[in-house]
Image: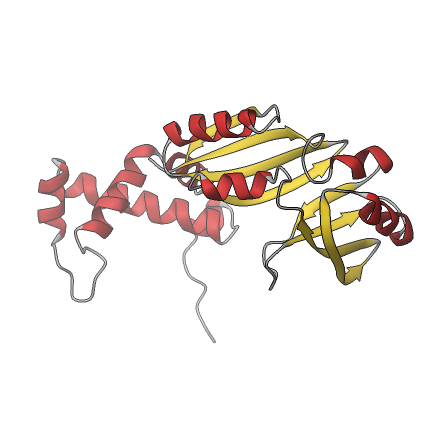
Length: 222
């Protein structure tokens, strides 16, 4: 099952370790999209001149260029030397995806999506073999997190997934409610009520409305 792992990694020993020693107040955040072969990193916590001095003095950095700046933080395109321990690349090589990454006080926090929980163990060992000391802060299944965030119970989540898989929401429908209820081994009435509760939970969560607003009768139009 696809899982999400939140991993802490000391910056010491990675590409930006020297920078955190030079600027203890430095903070860093990964830019999600950047057209480059390097990494897009937002740096803040010091004047730009001080940040660039530290970038220049960091031996692990091969090249850098400032892309943009806003409100005291600066987006840099950074390329590391080939021998540098690059946690982002290690994650990619192990088949994972870095969803977010930020660093402060000399510690990286990476949120990583992996194929299964066994992949987390492989990623942990790979990072440790590269001289860093990872700590698994949190590990959870993606489906579990998605269900929780939407306010669905496990049965509601499983019912909606089954309805999608069997084509209940297709136009025209590929399965009737009776056929779907037989598949789930519940009554037609129980399925209808479970779907209505799931719809209400989704509306309440995704549209950010209260339970009362979600169940209120429509207001007549003029």
